[in-house]
Image (cartoon, rainbow, N blue to C red):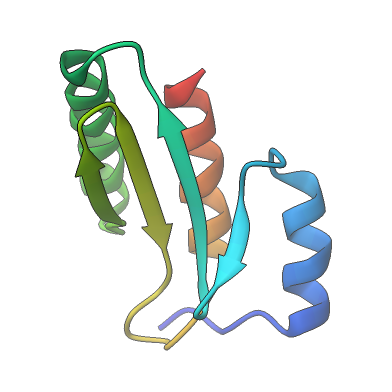
Amino acid sequence: MAELLTDDQIDAAIRDLLPEWKVADNALVRSVQKESFLDGIRLVATVAQLAESMNHHPDIDIRYTTITFRVSSHEAGGITDDDLVLARHIDTAAA
């Protein structure tokens, strides 16, 4: 199981992510606004493939053209290095 990051490690890591990421309830959270519903669904499909290849899956909330990703390591009970990697993949996919 991956080790939880300390608060200091999380603070340092969040500065390296795009400013859209926030920490809430032991998870990294980012909402992405897309042009259309189908653009949002395509983003979800891309992230789903990345997450499956990592065997590390985010919680995803779809609200019309707004997609919200919550990334945490459920087994570890918080944020780990795996979450940072997935967050960076989400940033790339959302760009």
